Amino acid sequence: MWRIVPLILAALPAFAETPPFEEPQGELTLQRAVDTALLHSPKLAPYAWDLRIGDARIAQARLRPNPELSFEIENIVLGGGAEHSSTTRSGGFTPATVALDPVVNNGAVQLQPTFTRPGLSGGVEHEKQSGADGFANAEFTLSLAHVIELGGKRAARIETAERERAVAEWDYEVARFEVVGEVVARYTEVLAAQARVQEELSVVELSDSFAATVSQLVDAGSVSPLESRRAKAAAEQAHLDRREKENELDRARLRLAATWGSTQPAFGNASGDVAATPALPTRESVQSLRNEHPILKRWGAELARRGAVFRQERSLAVPDLTVRFGYRATSIDEGHSRAFGAGTDGFSASRTTNGGDDLQHSIVLEASLPLPIFHRNQGAIREAELNHEKLGDEQRAWESEVDAALAESFSVAEASLERIDGVSQRILPELEKNYALTQEGYQRGKFAFLDVLDAQRAVVDARLELLDARIAYHQSIADIERLAGAGIVSNVHIPQNNLADESAKNSEN
Image (tube, rainbow, N blue to C red; front, side, top):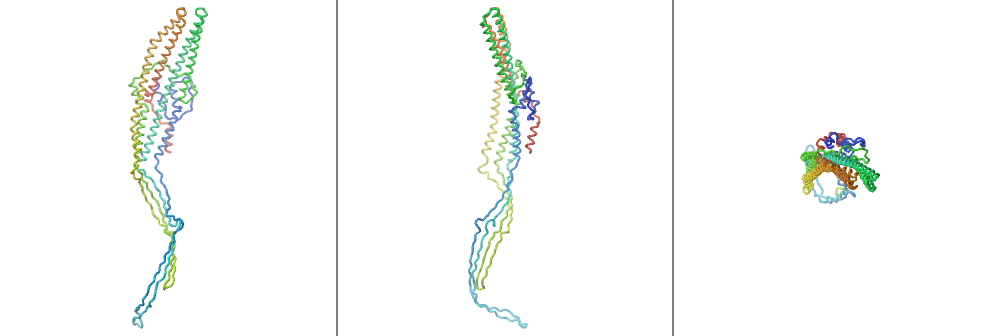
């Protein structure tokens, strides 16, 4: 039976679209049980979503920061503009002056004096000015800012997301491998339960046959009717034991069907013979095959992921540069001024208004860079570094646990082989001969009824012991296959599939 396990996964595409479920019927083989579980196991369904989630994370990691559009208004005056006034007084004395002005008279140039009378000059000048209010002197700025990631943050972010998806792929492989191991173990349980039922049927036949013989002897008056009652009671006990083993078989069938999500198994008998004893592989061959276990490759993917996380955290220590480019419009101050004066020259008044319709235009350029003085992401970098170093101990712990479990499985297998050889070759043949002689002597009146029952029980116990030894051997082989992956993982090839294509399309979109 175990020789077909290396070929179980060879033709199974990973992540293939799940076909319509068909409950296995008729005789069930290990190959079909594994195929059905890999296609319909409820444990594997979430991993397809994990792959798509990984695609979404990669798509998100590739995105760059969004630019920031901002609009600012400054210098908004509340409650009206301020108003102020000023008054200027001036005064003075103007003395008399004489000026000679040239005058042409009849072709001759003459100097004519001009007299200015003395007098007083001066006056008062008052000026009143009011400021603008509201948005008249406001400053408008429209700018666009963009963060430029430095230190390779985007590349590190993308690498981390890709490594996480790779780990998710190997998580699926490990889960699929565990499902196969569970199916093999459950299949072995069904074979064992079937063998126990068959063994109990032989015990029932043996007990019924002996009860019929005792009944004939009672009818012939050779033995007491009490012995017939004892024989019938023993036969009835054998029937009860058979029904109990049939119930155990039903439970084993349910556990096997649960691996593909069914609660009503419809298959018939599981093909296989626990009486067959396959050769026990050597420890060296199993150790070499264990290196093909998918979880070992998952450790490699996990190591790469933690290294990517470390590089990403280290890139976050480099601050990002923010560049801002904008346009600014500034209004010219708006205000009103009034002035008037009085003096020797008379009275004068004036009004001046500074309009607010004119704008000053300018370009704004700004660059900012945080100073990594206190926060340089030190704690997160150290945490990622420790997680990266921790993985080695985690892998060694797993290898130690697997090696211990393999050693225990080999020990059980070797002990089971020894029991099988001892019971089948030396103990059971002698007990069967003893039972036959005791039964024959009982019919002749040489042995008591209890002697026959003891001989019969010894044969039944030996047969059950041999069956348990064979079952234990097959279960230990199943444990070795599950732990080491002997022949299961080494020949697996995962081709491209429809679900992987769909995940890639989702990540591109």
